[in-house]
Image 1 (tube, rainbow, N blue to C red):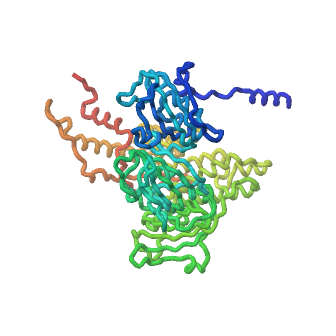
Image 2: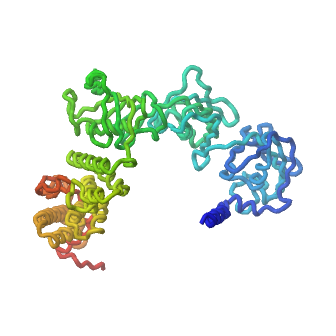
Image 3: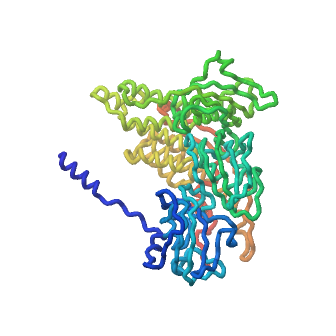
Length: 632
């Protein structure tokens, strides 16, 4: 057996590596014929390394005819601008002779390349356009001085922004909008003229996302960790006006020298500018790997302030909690949503200032007596530490089953509190962990198959009901398609599962698929007569939903078919008031110990026109005699 394994391993080792796809430059190199490109070293270079694929090369180039007449040059003494050329090997468009010749040079070397026309601009399908009046059909000398070459990071695909790292940074976290950044910055034009001197007293302070530095510079700094030093090459299209410096006319590119001193993490947590977390003291570890996970036990000190002129403090754990920190488990809805979302983005030891809108603060949570309704608040939070959640590895069977009950109970509480996303996470956790539970004896197997929450039901039913709890959460969250898919997991295993049919029917109805919903409710009654009341109530609601949609559609297309041929009909407008129809929403709770509750009704606003609107239009048109249309 061992020998066979060794042979298999040997065969795996001997398997040839996949060949790298042939690039366009490789195809061009195949055109080179002996004698078409000749090289003579004018001045030797230093070192041993030579430019490689992906390196940026900076060089001066002077082109002459074979009798010594200068055609063009980058050097000022020969009529050029004095700015050397920058190319990235394998990325930039470059003539074939230099594509082949520059990788043979050392740093500081000066070489003369004699090229036949097919090696410069005379190449068939040359990717580089020849300058005006360039003798592209002549054999020419290209004098190249390789000033330097180095690895670079390509920031933009058009090579308009490149970055060369001079000194590595201290971390991997990098700034982004709307972070606040401090950096030493200086700038030169491509020919070495100083555009911006490095400030002596303080680093430059700016906020990402605002026009405070040129766009190309911001794109490159977004790749820099704290402490990194780099040269950033920015071409004119990315050299935009900013408060840092004006745009200098006639400069094709700018070379920035940047040292990223520090940045403050500022996060727009919701993405709409309402919930802002601003780090005011760094924590321990790396973001986000060392941030709290779901179900972690967190310990924090915090101070809550109103955003009034006095900045009134409404709670301080160091004063109002006898100096003791607040302890809570994440994912259980025990603190305002905006508070928990922000703490989940913190590192141990970090202090952050969080500005929170009322709907993520206390409008949907128990409000302190001195916090007005609808008030924005600010929390100054210090995350002292946290304990990561334990998985069931190493747990005894009894500990596992107790934890299952606790998690399900928490999910049920969260569902009742209308915290559906958190409730769903609890049910899904139990479903995931169930796959790793292995009873060790018959007694444990019996208990596992008959959990305390569902006596006399097999374990499969326990999992089915958890799936239906997830489906109920998805339905509340408006994710109708996912709710249907979750119900299908139950119905695939048990096609006559009445509660799964009911839940799927409600999801179909919410998504506007009325025929599918009706089929599920009717099937319920045919399977279990005791479900007839629930099914009939659901069918009644379904009928009202259909009538309401038909009424809205009729109103919207009012007058469309009342005109004579040739006249233009005005589509009816909806003033918004008629969209607010109420209907009974009969729904039976499937949530574990809530399973035996009576059917309940609640008033809901009519949903917007559902995805099944086309089927409703067909019915409407049929009802007014337009089920057959002829195109003349």
